[in-house]
Image (cartoon, rainbow, N blue to C red; front, top):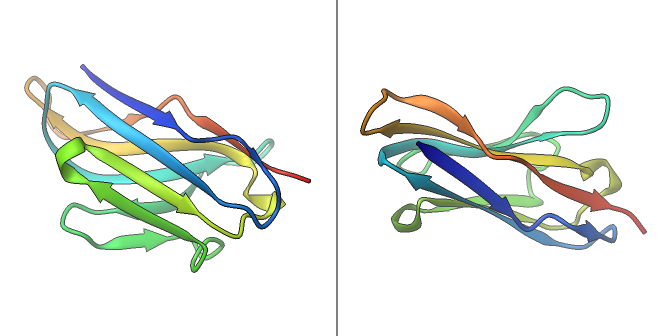
Length: 120
């Protein structure tokens, strides 16, 4: 069984910064891509950033230049550094990881979500 536990979401003023963390645990054999998605009220869940195994990263156009995704492979953890936050960044942020375990082939796992609110 795999768990993704997120942390770091909170209320922040426009222009501020936050760092989200997501740690994977369980009977993990290997992790491919790890990434972050977000869902604002009344909107569909959208990709924010993803980091493939080995380094390549992808960002949504709306966050390029402001957000940075990184991974600590030894800790099975992915981070999202968010700078110059805007009110439109307000959403529940979800961690996603493609994981192979001792008992299952590669599949997608989701965290429970962490709320980020950007408001003055």
